[in-house]
Image (cartoon, rainbow, N blue to C red; front, side, top):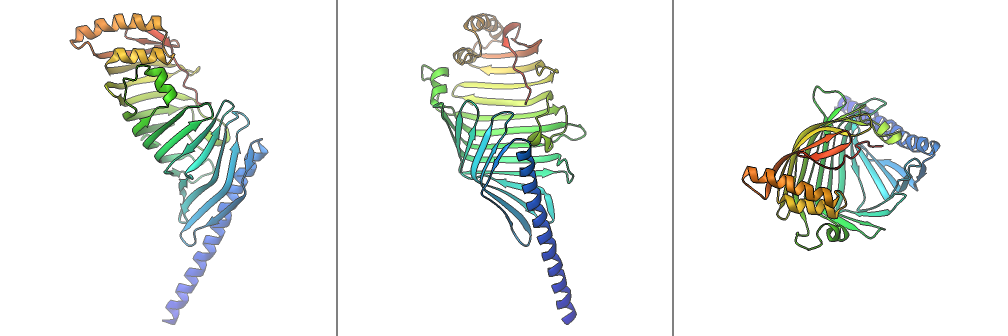
Length: 333
């Protein structure tokens, strides 16, 4: 019995020593990363940084944190930010945000309130911390801007993971049960007040290629360019408007997509009106598109439903054979 007690005491002492060493290393690594950002010109402010969680976790809490990127002018602040990891699996992190946080850009300040916001992140156990997979769950989000707009969502789920057998490619999916567009946006898009308050059932499933792996450089340096976008399924409903998309796009060095996405739209004429109201499509182009697409819809036997390719080529977008505007750039910088 005495030998057993000695063994237990030795093991407990060794584990306690391991935890102290690990907690100290974790704290030094976090402080070192923040100091490195400050040396690069970032504004880095916090009032306290502590690591707790003995014996099985490293729980890091940063209090009154503010980070400002001088290159983009984007600033984020929160009363606290927490990172949790198991002491025997430090490359698997859990992040937790407070119920209130702030995001500022050179153009506006945004207040973010949530009932809960957490993420699970697994990275490779090396210096680059290459992403293996991650999930983000947001419950009861309400966003308001100094520009006078506000929006919200009941539940948002986001997931990303390395695509099997494809380098620098990731499976990325997002889903939102209910999205509440801002009143200002609703007035622009739906001047007649015919659409319901909420956009229901939005989902997005894709496979996206990047110019380099997603790792710590995404935060410390810049975002890698997108090289390919495979939309496996994207869909959303707003009242009687239903839209679904699927297709493959290659992205050139300028950030412009090239390829084709199959579009299925119910009550597509109303969607054209929304695009015009939002300024995404000139009224003249919408009228021309309505004539041509109306002919295609008539041939299919359902005037209110449309199956047509959305093509991207040479920096332009075509709906069927009809040019409808300039293609967006997909650079993330």
